[in-house]
Length: 339
Image 1: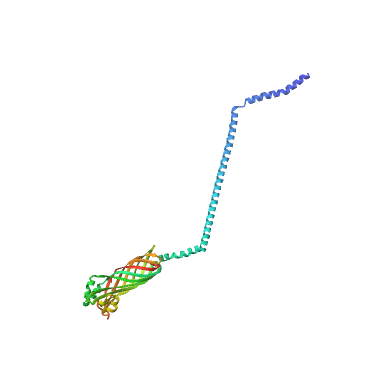
Image 2: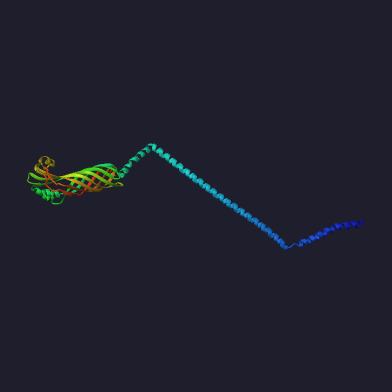
């Protein structure tokens, strides 16, 4: 009896477990497959979201890295530029120190003083300084007034053949000098003169001679244009001068020495002279061979204006007034810094 009760108790205890086990198997077998797939897709979606977040963080870190790299390169470039500027300033300072040392040395002092010598050319170009020298000219002188004088005196008519043209060639020599006041403007003076002799034998012992002397001078003004070593100028001169015609009988005994003829052998009958006002225009060039030597040519056109014409030594008028144009070609040699 008691054993029966023990089995009863055992069955009562074990039976609920049997029922629970069988019911649980049925419940697992009854879970739908869609629910499982849903859970799997949810898990996969979560994994993809996590991957996207991780990728975004990686991209963000890459951009930050690139930005830092650019900033580093920029900072490096600025540093190099700053170093270059400092290097340039240093080199400039060293050059200044070197120049100062050179000036203080013998070689530098010589070079420094030599720089002032080179400014002589600049002074010429600016038109400051001066010059003077000889002038030689070949002039074609209008002799119409002399021809009229000859025709007035029968004694002189034998010289008509000597003045059968309107012009006679004269070699006139003289000089000029000027000072420059800047901008190529020069102010000075000059003059030139010469003579020409015409002789006709009378007999074995006597020669009839006509001596024509010409001279003029005045105040000079020129404007010069400097181009390298060339000096191109235009100018003029205003002043006065005179022509003298001496009627001479000369003994042939002194013919070997013209000075003796003039001083000892002449038998002067009379002298005629004519004063004139001068207005001359000229233009030409000189070449600067060395800073203080200049040579060149110019064309000269002097005008002689004589209101009263020729007069005898006694002051008696023997001709008419005249105005003549007398072109010439001159050579000038100038010493000075202005050519």
